[in-house]
Length: 419
Image (tube, rainbow, N blue to C red; front, side, top):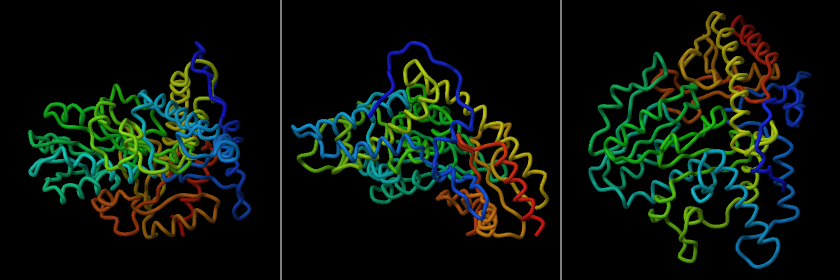
């Protein structure tokens, strides 16, 4: 269970070429219809590198136990979990005591809303947005209906795929107790001005919850600079296993009465976590962060991540621009969300005139191009775009996406549009 040194002073800036990175992902060897598979489904879950699986297997084979008991494998498990918290803390510029794990971001958010219920009074207000994944909407609506709170929703502008900030400012009042906002839209790729949302919250003394699930694979988060109170993310969106991670400011985690069993720990972050956790998943989440950091050498883990993220952002921005421009040139293609000149992730969603999104995805899959389709649980945003039950076709770039795969995708959409 090796971890990178946190004490080396310098960082090399030579991030490996995409071919070297791809060699770490066994899934990329898959052949479908005699064609190599190109995975564009990263926004729904990235592929996992060999190093992450090996760390998880090592834990399960040689260290597997429950926690806090006085024998070696239990003590090793405690160490492994703490190491994973440290990795997630470095990833977010947080403290390990501010990192809690759970089944997924949705479950963690429902858990948090239940815990926060006692802080709210009838008539208090929560602000959500139409652009968000419903994991950052439904939990707040549920607690609102149970506690007599008013949940207000910021409108999305369909033409731009961005939030209406005039409406946002109007909805935040002295009655607002919490703002829930996505850092980026998993459906349209829109990057929201979450710092502006935080400033609005602070102006009325409200809390801020940020859904960063779609954001963290593409931009390195600094929760101190964001000044958010809570932030959720999912390891399987950044080359890890299926597990959710919740950041909460330590003083808040210490003061919130989380539902838990009586004998369970009272101190954060374990007071947030219910029952026996997915310990191999926790270990895998830390390993995924280490995989990304280790693409360069030297320096602290955080310093390595900063270098890697800068380079991967440059690469993905170039790929996304080519995909946007290539699709724009195809007759019958409608692109959604902000253009590449606006803040966005390398996630491009589109429709093909006269062809159901399900059929587009199926036809592309026949060409070895794996894309997701539907509303991606951002149902309100898709409804506002009047796309019905078929929704969108979504292509996302990851660290293993190549320029050649982008060209294959453009060619595949051209053929479908002509049929």
